[in-house]
Amino acid sequence: MDSNYTYGPVPSRRLGRSLGVDLVPPKTCNFNCIYCQLGPTDRTTVERADYVPVAEVVEEVRTRLAEGARPDYITLGGSGEPTLHRSFGEVAAGIRRSTDVPIALLTNGALFYLPEVRAACAAIDLVLPSLDAGDEETFRRINRPHPGITLEKVVGGLAALRREFAGEIWLEVFIIEGVNSSDEQAGAIKRCVERIGPPRVQLNTAVRPPADEQVHAAASESLERIQRLLGPRAEIIAPTGGFEAIPGAEAKKDEVLAILRRRPCTLDDIAGGLGIHPNEAVKYLRALLDEGAARRRQRRYETYYEAGSAG
Ligand code: SF4
Image (cartoon, rainbow, N blue to C red; front, side, top):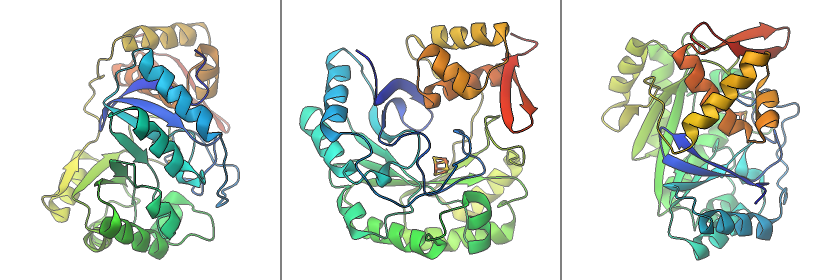
């Protein structure tokens, strides 16, 4: 069947095999993070709407499972911020009625200050929010949020979610060398983490592109120092270079490389050319970059990828 709202399963370091569900059109987000793999947000929005039809999304997930997709998680996320979909809770409840596969929500966490957004998580098993700063200035520098969103709203909302939500919460902290990697900034993040109280904190950093030119991967010493500071609930999930095997993934990766051998492409060119979701294309591209089979080239405001020396 045509996939309008689902993609993958794709290999995920945090979730194993993840069947992605895209709840908003590209790039509908209340943030414009400097490390976003999907490119810039042209206009941040806080408008919650039924961006895609609930019944059709649920039906497509059902069909994908009936056709044999065997994910470890069904992940609500996609091309922007899924909680901007006013009925994401109904999507989760509809999926829950048709399968026991756990449902994850990949979110920037900005809207949990709204009681209705927290309540909409009832059918979700695992919430994966992010928090990249412990002070307002760094928050605005990294996440470049909609003017109506403050760090205090985000942290307060996450703390309320933690009190009310029966499922798991794994908080991701994205560390960028020289931007939020100092002891002072990590200390401020720690104070927010203690207020929220998530059982797990996962430290991530820039994989090689796609990402902004100013985003530099944190050195492993920085990640280890911050992990020690945050205590036993913190773990490092930054990439180790392995490409998680999923049947068919190697073949797709080869298809991406075949395209890059013909001409340099943007992420959108690759996704469009193969008819796959940009989030799926990112996975193959990242593996090729790690292997040296592809490399990145910046041309004015566009990032292009081409076959590398090992490709
Ligand atoms: S919240 Fe996610 S989708 Fe939105 S800009 Fe940040 S990384 Fe991109």
